[in-house]
Length: 280
Length: 103
Image (tube, rainbow over all chains, first blue to last red; front, top):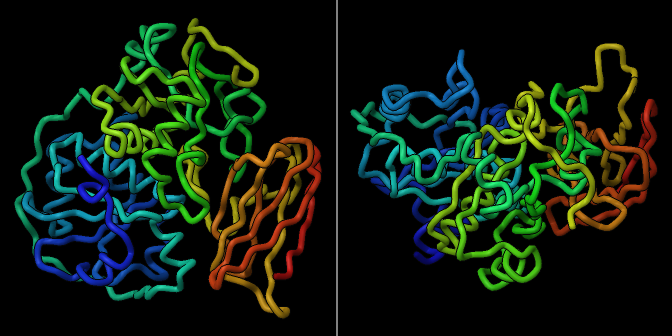
Protein backbone atom coordinates (compact mmCIF):
# COMPACT_ATOMS: atom_id res chain seq x y z
CA UNK A 1 0.00 0.00 0.00
CA UNK A 2 1.35 3.43 -0.87
CA UNK A 3 0.47 6.86 0.42
CA UNK A 4 -1.59 7.64 -2.66
CA UNK A 5 -3.85 4.70 -1.79
CA UNK A 6 -4.82 6.22 1.55
CA UNK A 7 -4.11 9.97 1.36
CA UNK A 8 -5.07 12.82 -0.93
CA UNK A 9 -3.85 16.41 -0.78
CA UNK A 10 -5.78 19.66 -0.90
CA UNK A 11 -5.11 20.24 -4.61
CA UNK A 12 -6.62 16.84 -5.40
CA UNK A 13 -9.70 17.67 -3.36
CA UNK A 14 -10.11 21.04 -5.12
CA UNK A 15 -9.88 19.29 -8.49
CA UNK A 16 -11.93 16.16 -7.77
CA UNK A 17 -14.13 16.89 -4.76
CA UNK A 18 -17.20 17.21 -7.00
CA UNK A 19 -16.49 14.22 -9.22
CA UNK A 20 -19.14 11.48 -9.47
CA UNK A 21 -18.20 8.62 -7.20
CA UNK A 22 -16.26 10.86 -4.80
CA UNK A 23 -17.83 11.83 -1.48
CA UNK A 24 -16.15 14.32 0.84
CA UNK A 25 -17.04 13.86 4.51
CA UNK A 26 -16.12 16.22 7.34
CA UNK A 27 -15.99 14.35 10.65
CA UNK A 28 -15.72 15.96 14.03
CA UNK A 29 -16.87 15.75 17.60
CA UNK A 30 -17.99 19.36 17.50
CA UNK A 31 -19.67 19.85 14.13
CA UNK A 32 -20.25 23.58 14.57
CA UNK A 33 -17.14 24.16 12.43
CA UNK A 34 -18.87 22.38 9.52
CA UNK A 35 -21.95 24.52 9.98
CA UNK A 36 -19.86 27.73 9.78
CA UNK A 37 -18.01 26.60 6.66
CA UNK A 38 -16.78 23.40 5.05
CA UNK A 39 -15.14 22.20 1.86
CA UNK A 40 -17.50 22.44 -1.10
CA UNK A 41 -19.59 19.27 -1.60
CA UNK A 42 -18.69 17.85 1.82
CA UNK A 43 -21.35 16.18 3.94
CA UNK A 44 -20.86 15.89 7.69
CA UNK A 45 -20.66 13.05 10.16
CA UNK A 46 -20.96 13.83 13.85
CA UNK A 47 -18.48 11.60 15.68
CA UNK A 48 -20.70 11.28 18.70
CA UNK A 49 -24.28 11.53 17.43
CA UNK A 50 -23.72 9.46 14.28
CA UNK A 51 -20.99 6.97 15.17
CA UNK A 52 -21.58 6.17 18.86
CA UNK A 53 -24.42 4.10 20.29
CA UNK A 54 -26.64 6.52 22.26
CA UNK A 55 -27.00 4.17 25.24
CA UNK A 56 -24.16 1.63 25.49
CA UNK A 57 -20.51 2.60 25.16
CA UNK A 58 -19.98 1.11 21.73
CA UNK A 59 -20.27 1.86 18.06
CA UNK A 60 -23.49 2.01 16.15
CA UNK A 61 -24.16 -1.53 14.94
CA UNK A 62 -23.95 -2.73 11.35
CA UNK A 63 -27.56 -1.81 10.62
CA UNK A 64 -27.00 1.62 12.13
CA UNK A 65 -23.90 2.20 10.00
CA UNK A 66 -25.81 1.11 6.90
CA UNK A 67 -28.64 3.50 7.74
CA UNK A 68 -26.19 6.37 8.35
CA UNK A 69 -24.32 5.97 5.08
CA UNK A 70 -27.53 5.39 3.11
CA UNK A 71 -29.02 8.57 4.54
CA UNK A 72 -25.87 10.60 3.72
CA UNK A 73 -25.99 9.36 0.14
CA UNK A 74 -22.84 7.24 0.29
CA UNK A 75 -22.81 4.03 -1.75
CA UNK A 76 -20.57 0.99 -1.52
CA UNK A 77 -18.69 1.97 -4.68
CA UNK A 78 -17.94 5.56 -3.66
CA UNK A 79 -14.47 6.82 -2.87
CA UNK A 80 -14.88 8.44 0.53
CA UNK A 81 -12.50 11.29 1.42
CA UNK A 82 -12.50 12.07 5.12
CA UNK A 83 -11.20 15.20 6.80
CA UNK A 84 -11.81 17.10 10.01
CA UNK A 85 -10.46 19.32 12.76
CA UNK A 86 -8.21 18.32 15.64
CA UNK A 87 -5.46 17.34 13.19
CA UNK A 88 -7.75 14.75 11.60
CA UNK A 89 -8.20 12.74 14.83
CA UNK A 90 -11.88 12.14 14.30
CA UNK A 91 -11.45 11.72 10.57
CA UNK A 92 -8.81 9.05 11.26
CA UNK A 93 -11.22 7.43 13.70
CA UNK A 94 -13.92 7.45 11.01
CA UNK A 95 -11.41 6.03 8.52
CA UNK A 96 -10.70 3.16 10.92
CA UNK A 97 -14.45 2.78 11.49
CA UNK A 98 -15.20 2.67 7.74
CA UNK A 99 -12.52 -0.03 7.37
CA UNK A 100 -13.97 -1.87 10.35
CA UNK A 101 -17.28 -2.13 8.52
CA UNK A 102 -15.60 -3.13 5.27
CA UNK A 103 -15.53 0.11 3.26
CA UNK A 104 -12.01 -0.08 1.83
CA UNK A 105 -12.21 2.73 -0.71
CA UNK A 106 -11.57 5.46 1.83
CA UNK A 107 -8.82 8.08 2.12
CA UNK A 108 -7.83 10.95 4.37
CA UNK A 109 -7.23 14.53 3.26
CA UNK A 110 -3.65 15.04 4.48
CA UNK A 111 -3.57 17.95 6.91
CA UNK A 112 -7.34 17.96 7.32
CA UNK A 113 -9.22 21.11 8.03
CA UNK A 114 -6.28 22.87 9.64
CA UNK A 115 -4.01 22.90 6.62
CA UNK A 116 -6.97 23.85 4.43
CA UNK A 117 -7.74 26.81 6.69
CA UNK A 118 -4.13 27.90 7.10
CA UNK A 119 -3.86 28.01 3.30
CA UNK A 120 -7.02 30.16 3.16
CA UNK A 121 -8.76 27.74 0.79
CA UNK A 122 -12.49 28.06 0.05
CA UNK A 123 -15.04 27.12 2.70
CA UNK A 124 -18.77 27.23 1.94
CA UNK A 125 -21.99 26.90 3.91
CA UNK A 126 -24.05 25.21 1.14
CA UNK A 127 -25.06 21.73 2.24
CA UNK A 128 -25.00 19.28 -0.67
CA UNK A 129 -28.13 17.30 -1.40
CA UNK A 130 -27.26 13.68 -2.10
CA UNK A 131 -29.80 11.04 -3.11
CA UNK A 132 -30.27 8.26 -0.58
CA UNK A 133 -28.52 4.97 -1.24
CA UNK A 134 -28.84 1.41 -0.01
CA UNK A 135 -25.51 0.90 1.68
CA UNK A 136 -24.50 -2.61 2.73
CA UNK A 137 -21.83 -2.97 5.42
CA UNK A 138 -19.72 -6.00 6.31
CA UNK A 139 -19.48 -7.52 9.76
CA UNK A 140 -16.91 -5.71 11.94
CA UNK A 141 -13.31 -6.66 11.17
CA UNK A 142 -12.11 -7.47 14.68
CA UNK A 143 -8.53 -7.79 13.38
CA UNK A 144 -8.16 -4.02 13.76
CA UNK A 145 -10.09 -3.46 17.02
CA UNK A 146 -8.74 -4.39 20.47
CA UNK A 147 -10.80 -5.03 23.59
CA UNK A 148 -9.69 -4.76 27.21
CA UNK A 149 -8.85 -8.42 27.81
CA UNK A 150 -6.56 -8.45 24.79
CA UNK A 151 -4.86 -5.34 26.12
CA UNK A 152 -4.24 -6.89 29.53
CA UNK A 153 -2.90 -10.04 27.85
CA UNK A 154 -0.58 -7.91 25.73
CA UNK A 155 1.23 -6.38 28.71
CA UNK A 156 4.89 -7.34 28.48
CA UNK A 157 4.26 -9.39 25.33
CA UNK A 158 3.15 -7.15 22.47
CA UNK A 159 3.74 -3.53 21.59
CA UNK A 160 1.47 -1.19 23.52
CA UNK A 161 1.68 2.33 22.13
CA UNK A 162 0.24 5.08 24.30
CA UNK A 163 -0.26 8.03 21.97
CA UNK A 164 -1.33 10.60 24.56
CA UNK A 165 0.83 13.54 25.56
CA UNK A 166 3.78 12.87 27.91
CA UNK A 167 1.90 14.58 30.75
CA UNK A 168 -1.14 12.32 30.34
CA UNK A 169 1.13 9.28 30.04
CA UNK A 170 2.91 10.17 33.27
CA UNK A 171 -0.36 10.73 35.10
CA UNK A 172 0.10 14.49 35.62
CA UNK A 173 -2.85 15.25 33.33
CA UNK A 174 -5.99 13.15 32.93
CA UNK A 175 -7.12 14.64 29.64
CA UNK A 176 -5.70 16.70 26.78
CA UNK A 177 -4.78 20.13 28.08
CA UNK A 178 -7.57 21.80 26.13
CA UNK A 179 -10.09 20.11 28.46
CA UNK A 180 -10.81 20.43 32.18
CA UNK A 181 -8.90 17.89 34.26
CA UNK A 182 -11.89 16.50 36.14
CA UNK A 183 -12.00 12.79 35.43
CA UNK A 184 -13.11 9.69 37.32
CA UNK A 185 -10.34 7.37 36.23
CA UNK A 186 -6.83 7.02 37.67
CA UNK A 187 -3.88 8.69 35.99
CA UNK A 188 -0.96 6.85 34.40
CA UNK A 189 -0.47 4.29 31.66
CA UNK A 190 -0.61 0.56 30.91
CA UNK A 191 2.61 -1.12 32.09
CA UNK A 192 5.19 -1.70 29.33
CA UNK A 193 3.50 0.80 27.01
CA UNK A 194 5.74 3.07 24.96
CA UNK A 195 4.74 6.72 24.88
CA UNK A 196 4.74 7.97 21.30
CA UNK A 197 2.43 11.00 21.25
CA UNK A 198 0.29 11.14 18.11
CA UNK A 199 1.63 14.65 17.53
CA UNK A 200 5.10 13.29 16.78
CA UNK A 201 3.69 11.64 13.67
CA UNK A 202 2.36 14.94 12.32
CA UNK A 203 3.91 18.11 11.04
CA UNK A 204 2.76 21.40 12.52
CA UNK A 205 0.29 21.87 9.66
CA UNK A 206 -1.36 18.54 10.45
CA UNK A 207 0.11 16.55 7.53
CA UNK A 208 1.75 13.20 8.21
CA UNK A 209 5.53 13.00 8.40
CA UNK A 210 7.42 11.02 5.76
CA UNK A 211 7.49 7.23 5.91
CA UNK A 212 11.19 7.29 6.76
CA UNK A 213 10.65 9.75 9.62
CA UNK A 214 7.74 7.67 10.92
CA UNK A 215 9.71 4.42 10.78
CA UNK A 216 12.53 6.07 12.72
CA UNK A 217 10.09 7.52 15.26
CA UNK A 218 8.39 4.24 16.15
CA UNK A 219 11.20 1.80 15.50
CA UNK A 220 14.57 3.36 16.30
CA UNK A 221 13.47 5.98 18.81
CA UNK A 222 10.52 4.36 20.64
CA UNK A 223 11.61 0.75 20.33
CA UNK A 224 8.40 -0.58 18.81
CA UNK A 225 9.19 -4.09 17.58
CA UNK A 226 7.62 -4.28 14.12
CA UNK A 227 7.78 -8.08 14.27
CA UNK A 228 5.18 -8.18 17.03
CA UNK A 229 1.52 -7.30 17.25
CA UNK A 230 0.72 -3.73 18.27
CA UNK A 231 -2.15 -2.13 20.15
CA UNK A 232 -2.49 1.64 20.13
CA UNK A 233 -4.54 3.51 22.71
CA UNK A 234 -5.18 7.04 23.96
CA UNK A 235 -8.07 8.32 26.08
CA UNK A 236 -11.14 7.50 23.96
CA UNK A 237 -9.63 5.98 20.84
CA UNK A 238 -9.51 8.79 18.29
CA UNK A 239 -5.92 9.97 18.71
CA UNK A 240 -4.91 6.30 18.64
CA UNK A 241 -6.90 5.88 15.42
CA UNK A 242 -4.51 8.51 14.01
CA UNK A 243 -1.57 6.31 15.10
CA UNK A 244 -3.33 3.16 13.85
CA UNK A 245 -3.55 4.91 10.47
CA UNK A 246 0.18 5.66 10.57
CA UNK A 247 1.27 2.15 11.55
CA UNK A 248 -1.25 0.10 9.56
CA UNK A 249 -1.94 2.24 6.51
CA UNK A 250 1.20 4.33 5.96
CA UNK A 251 3.86 1.94 7.27
CA UNK A 252 1.97 -1.19 6.24
CA UNK A 253 2.29 -3.04 9.54
CA UNK A 254 -0.12 -5.98 9.37
CA UNK A 255 -1.06 -6.61 13.00
CA UNK A 256 -2.11 -3.30 14.49
CA UNK A 257 -5.26 -2.78 16.53
CA UNK A 258 -6.87 0.32 17.96
CA UNK A 259 -8.12 0.00 21.54
CA UNK A 260 -11.07 2.37 21.48
CA UNK A 261 -11.91 1.72 25.13
CA UNK A 262 -8.56 3.38 25.82
CA UNK A 263 -7.69 5.14 29.04
CA UNK A 264 -11.25 6.09 30.02
CA UNK A 265 -11.93 2.34 30.21
CA UNK A 266 -8.56 0.98 31.34
CA UNK A 267 -8.01 3.70 33.96
CA UNK A 268 -11.37 2.84 35.54
CA UNK A 269 -10.95 -0.97 35.66
CA UNK A 270 -10.68 -2.53 39.10
CA UNK A 271 -7.55 -4.54 39.75
CA UNK A 272 -5.55 -3.93 36.58
CA UNK A 273 -1.91 -2.83 36.82
CA UNK A 274 -1.08 0.83 36.21
CA UNK A 275 2.27 2.56 35.96
CA UNK A 276 2.80 6.24 36.62
CA UNK A 277 5.70 8.47 35.72
CA UNK A 278 7.50 9.42 32.56
CA UNK A 279 8.37 7.01 29.79
CA UNK A 280 11.58 5.05 30.01
CA UNK B 1 -18.54 20.10 24.77
CA UNK B 2 -18.61 16.97 26.86
CA UNK B 3 -15.42 15.84 28.55
CA UNK B 4 -16.46 12.33 27.51
CA UNK B 5 -14.91 13.35 24.23
CA UNK B 6 -11.47 14.62 23.40
CA UNK B 7 -12.04 17.26 20.76
CA UNK B 8 -10.85 20.81 21.13
CA UNK B 9 -13.72 23.29 20.91
CA UNK B 10 -12.93 26.54 19.12
CA UNK B 11 -11.66 29.01 21.66
CA UNK B 12 -11.28 26.32 24.31
CA UNK B 13 -13.71 24.70 26.73
CA UNK B 14 -15.46 26.91 29.30
CA UNK B 15 -13.76 27.13 32.71
CA UNK B 16 -16.87 26.68 34.81
CA UNK B 17 -20.15 28.36 35.47
CA UNK B 18 -18.53 30.06 38.46
CA UNK B 19 -15.76 31.60 36.30
CA UNK B 20 -13.34 30.23 38.86
CA UNK B 21 -10.19 28.30 38.05
CA UNK B 22 -10.80 26.09 41.11
CA UNK B 23 -8.48 23.11 40.82
CA UNK B 24 -7.44 23.96 37.26
CA UNK B 25 -4.30 25.69 35.97
CA UNK B 26 -5.87 27.75 33.21
CA UNK B 27 -3.97 29.53 30.44
CA UNK B 28 -6.21 31.64 28.25
CA UNK B 29 -6.19 34.73 26.10
CA UNK B 30 -6.76 36.20 22.66
CA UNK B 31 -4.86 36.60 19.43
CA UNK B 32 -5.10 39.92 17.64
CA UNK B 33 -3.62 41.48 14.52
CA UNK B 34 -3.57 45.25 14.22
CA UNK B 35 -6.02 45.42 17.10
CA UNK B 36 -8.58 43.08 15.50
CA UNK B 37 -9.36 39.54 16.60
CA UNK B 38 -7.81 36.73 14.55
CA UNK B 39 -10.75 34.32 14.16
CA UNK B 40 -9.01 31.74 11.96
CA UNK B 41 -5.92 30.12 13.38
CA UNK B 42 -4.64 27.73 15.99
CA UNK B 43 -3.09 28.01 19.44
CA UNK B 44 -0.71 25.21 20.43
CA UNK B 45 0.56 24.53 23.93
CA UNK B 46 4.07 23.07 24.26
CA UNK B 47 5.60 21.82 27.51
CA UNK B 48 8.90 23.02 28.93
CA UNK B 49 10.72 20.46 26.78
CA UNK B 50 9.16 21.89 23.63
CA UNK B 51 6.86 18.88 23.19
CA UNK B 52 3.37 19.45 21.81
CA UNK B 53 0.67 19.05 24.46
CA UNK B 54 -2.56 20.46 23.04
CA UNK B 55 -4.05 22.65 20.35
CA UNK B 56 -7.31 24.54 19.93
CA UNK B 57 -8.73 26.41 16.96
CA UNK B 58 -9.09 30.09 17.82
CA UNK B 59 -12.60 31.26 18.66
CA UNK B 60 -14.38 33.93 16.65
CA UNK B 61 -12.97 36.46 19.11
CA UNK B 62 -9.45 35.07 18.63
CA UNK B 63 -9.76 33.35 22.00
CA UNK B 64 -8.05 30.23 23.29
CA UNK B 65 -8.00 28.36 26.62
CA UNK B 66 -5.96 25.47 28.03
CA UNK B 67 -6.17 23.46 31.22
CA UNK B 68 -2.52 22.88 31.99
CA UNK B 69 -0.54 21.69 34.99
CA UNK B 70 1.64 23.94 37.18
CA UNK B 71 4.82 24.98 35.42
CA UNK B 72 6.20 26.78 32.41
CA UNK B 73 4.60 26.39 29.01
CA UNK B 74 5.07 27.81 25.54
CA UNK B 75 2.09 29.03 23.56
CA UNK B 76 2.53 28.98 19.78
CA UNK B 77 0.06 30.63 17.42
CA UNK B 78 -0.41 29.57 13.77
CA UNK B 79 -2.55 31.66 11.44
CA UNK B 80 -3.05 32.00 7.67
CA UNK B 81 -0.32 33.82 5.78
CA UNK B 82 2.43 31.89 7.59
CA UNK B 83 1.82 33.90 10.74
CA UNK B 84 3.73 32.47 13.71
CA UNK B 85 4.07 33.80 17.26
CA UNK B 86 5.30 32.34 20.55
CA UNK B 87 4.96 33.33 24.19
CA UNK B 88 6.31 31.65 27.32
CA UNK B 89 3.78 31.47 30.13
CA UNK B 90 3.62 30.12 33.67
CA UNK B 91 0.57 28.25 35.00
CA UNK B 92 -0.55 27.54 38.56
CA UNK B 93 -3.41 25.58 40.11
CA UNK B 94 -6.35 27.80 41.00
CA UNK B 95 -5.13 30.58 38.76
CA UNK B 96 -6.25 31.88 35.37
CA UNK B 97 -3.22 33.15 33.49
CA UNK B 98 -4.23 35.68 30.84
CA UNK B 99 -2.19 36.12 27.69
CA UNK B 100 -2.84 38.60 24.90
CA UNK B 101 -0.91 37.77 21.73
CA UNK B 102 -0.52 40.42 19.02
CA UNK B 103 0.79 38.96 15.78
